[in-house]
Image (cartoon, rainbow, N blue to C red):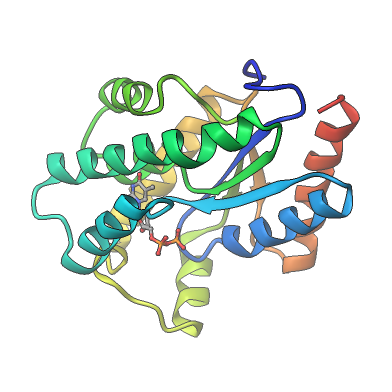
Length: 210
Ligand code: TYD
């Protein structure tokens, strides 16, 4: 595990394609930690800060017209998010649960190599990495079915199946590259089963002394 920012602090990111159920599981993880007496901050990317909220509407409603600029907007959002929200909370010994972080860029901005995106992520975060990343793994058809039921669409998310399959492949590549940090949670099962698998990971962390 990465070196902790402060004793007792913990930084966990939640990753997966749209419709994988990570946001639901983040809420459950927050409850789990609070029930165990920890202070929790829930946050998300893009849009975890004021500037991030503006970027979020630019990115999600307008759609980024130039891919390089899109990457850099995510980086600007991330850099401010780390500075204003994540680091202060970790320094206070809190548990930060973040819906999407560096691995979303590796997966979604897949026109660019890991090498380039690693360097940009490192620059934007000052080298901060999650202590644990939970990757909720679902086949594309399952995610699409769930999303259709919620009838959600916006520009960045109405992407082709080919694009989304590549996102999945990049998530897998990132997980294989960094198995210590990124834990794969099969997320095709019921919400309760996924929660159980996630809580097993979280209990392991608490047992290891947090
Ligand atoms: P959001 O509405 O937050 O979706 P979700 O609930 O699935 O997280 O939209 C975030 C979108 O932004 C999502 O399609 C992934 C994309 N994204 C990137 O392309 N790169 C990034 O670095 C991040 C953080 C998000």
